[in-house]
Length: 508
Ligand SMILES: [Zn+2]
Image 1 (cartoon, rainbow, N blue to C red):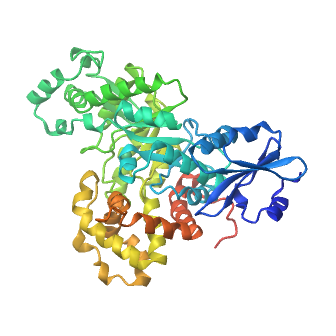
Image 2 (cartoon, rainbow, N blue to C red):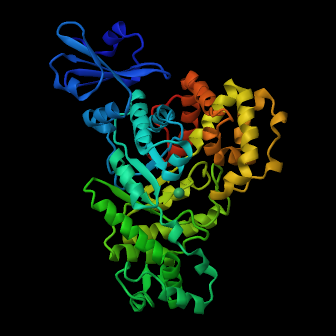
Image 3 (spheres, rainbow, N blue to C red):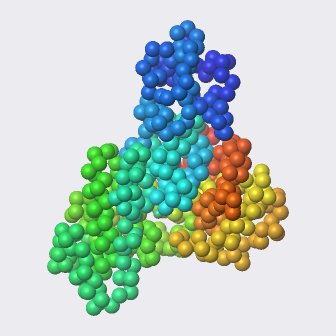
């Protein structure tokens, strides 16, 4: 049997060409369109591979059988077990980027962008926080399955990771282990005491005494081991005086105990995994002394981590560029990178990383590529851009609703958009609707209200926007993928091949 694309296309008109894989004398491809697709497997009828998948088999030609399988969780799992590169694995210190996808339709566009930059950045297509899953009504299996089919459909062929993002409890870990995630981002932010920054010395001493010393397998007196130390880095030294050490312990001590607890819970699962520690969503920046304290304490407690997300200086608002002095950021970030090399090496992770174009080169330069970029919500914004093009009326209704929700929904995000500065829905002409996604205030307003937009129901119980939203998007998969590709190339290019595009030689 001739399993080449040209031959199979003669028989199967709705074969998605990029998806075709031949392995072990069997051909796998996705068949259909964005609304209804199935996994097709063509193999000799006695090929045991066929039994791994659930679906309907029928005799084909010359002793071959064709099996058509639903794109469900079980078949996605079987596909990951069969086509090894689709199974997420730990990716180590490689330059990497997480894309996130709140709708489950974005991965093909993400794949196009990673391919366009030459495969030099390892993707984590499956990446979602528990908070986002709750807000979108998706399960860890949904996130993993959508990413699997998307990567398969678009022809991704090399390694991927999968990020169970911002996990706060052992139960969060359990849910994500079962779904096959490999990159675990532990967020002990609720245990960070940001008030330590402004607390008077007497209060600091009280708070030190009250730390969970048993969980920290240590005592307050042990903190003296850090006092007076001078940590020599490549370009500078960090002096740990008593005030800085006590403040660091108060601010991060409980969080460190929580990370150790979460790490041990995860390590007991006996799965391949890597850990990220993130304290990015806290009130005040992480100082260099605090970074050293965190790394030293985590090591003392036996925690292994591949990536750390301190809270950097400046403002990392959702979906917009870095707000602050870029040169000051680089100067501060450079020392974090030196600490990460001295105490690891481990990656520095850039959370809320969407659209931080002005600092990408500095993060790449200072980490020498040992960096992880995490973006989440802008694939949703590119979905809105697609809808604004094809259905401006639906887009305008979503925007009006988002404005009404903004005061409430902004609570858990770092954003500074003001309703008064964003255009009124009625003033947005159809032709200008897509460009609204580029207006700072409208962009943030739309960014943080996704949960309400996707899950709000009318009085009759029907979802108010979700079904129309997804129908429009599924009707224009190429337009959505093209918007995502353009958007993510801008993100990935500074991290890939020293900032150059491959495979696009003759452009411009
Ligand atoms: Zn984060």
